[in-house]
Amino acid sequence: MFGSRVDLHLPQTQWPEPQPVSESQLAGTRNTQERMRLLVVEDQPDILAALARALRKQGYAVDVAANGEEGLQKALE
Image (cartoon, rainbow, N blue to C red; front, side):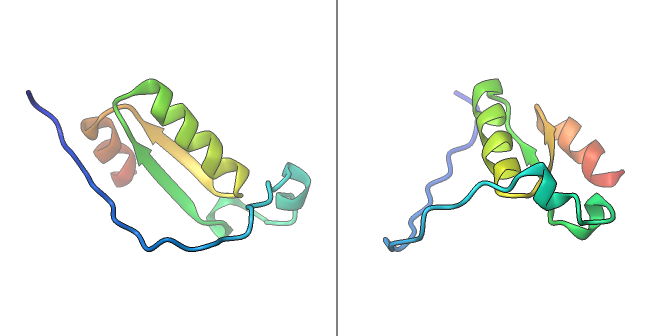
C-alpha cells in the first residue's frame, strides 16, 4: 500500500473555544496578503473540504490542492 502516515503527539491542554471570524470582521484588511495565507494539500476530498472550511472560519485565507503536484504548482505561483 502506498501513501503517508503522520502521527502527531501534542500535549493535552485546555484552549478556549475558537470564535468564528465573519466576513465583515475581515473586511478591514486591504488584501488577502495581510492575512495568514495557507495552502492545504490533501487527496481525500472530504478531509480537504473540512480542513479548508475550519481554517477559513478562523480567518485564514486558504488555497487548496487535491494532490502534491497541484500543491507544488500553487506554492510556486
